[in-house]
Amino acid sequence: QVQLVESGGGLVQAGDSLRLSCAASGRTFSRWATAWFRQAPGKKREFVSAVTWSGGRQYYADSVKGRFTISKDNSKDTVYLDMTSLKSDDTAIYYCTSGRETPDFFSYYRREDPYEYWGQGTQVTVSS
Image 1 (cartoon, rainbow, N blue to C red):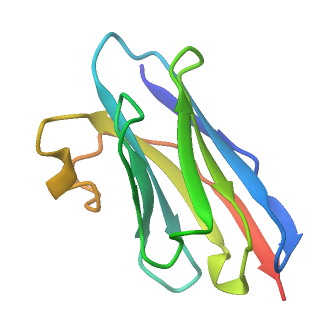
Image 2 (image 1 turned 45 degrees about the horizontal axis):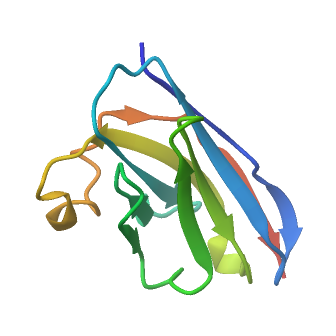
């Protein structure tokens, strides 16, 4: 049973930083891509960032580019999302998700349906 567990959310002020973690367990050998999505109150869930299995390629939504950094530690099977210069618009539940990476990952990383496993989410609240 594959499990993804997010941690690191909290209440911060605008301009602050946070690090989210996504720890995976139960996965057998495979190439897994991992992404972060978020859902703000009253809004649809949206793509935030994604990283390939090797960590060599990272993708970001325009709204977070330059402020968020995704990284991973394969030895710990953990993916991180470092968020800086947080804004009130970043307030949302952040979800970690993972799916088997295929060669055309670059064409679908923003979509939800290719990802197989989802975490329970972690709340990030940014006060202005």
